[in-house]
Image 1 (cartoon, rainbow, N blue to C red):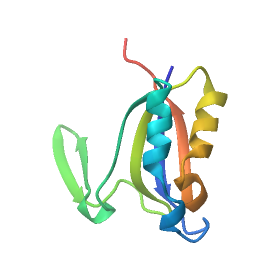
Image 2: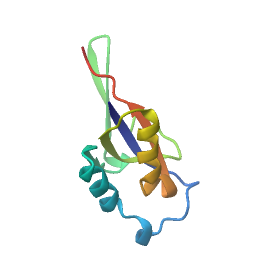
Image 3: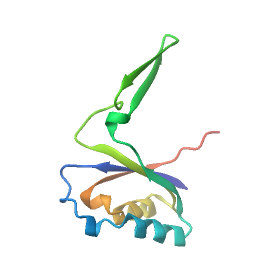
Image 4: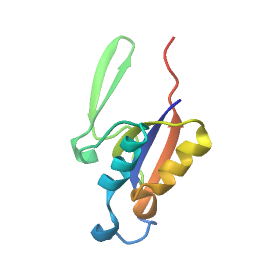
Length: 110
């Protein structure tokens, strides 16, 4: 099953230490096991545009849909046998220590 991992900045996390942020090794491990699908960083929330359609009219707003102390920094999509396996993979991500990783099962269309 596929899982979306939302990689977030979180001010309550450990102080950032670039020496312990080896996301490349994390990706490499998952690639070696055939579990890694895709992922990337995302631009800061100041570059976001939110789109809504109400009454047939499209409107855009500068910025993210929601604002809070945690900010979306990236995403990964992985294949995992079950939620526990996906959570274990998320816990091994460097940003689980410096930020937070939200794990969501992908709900396929159709």
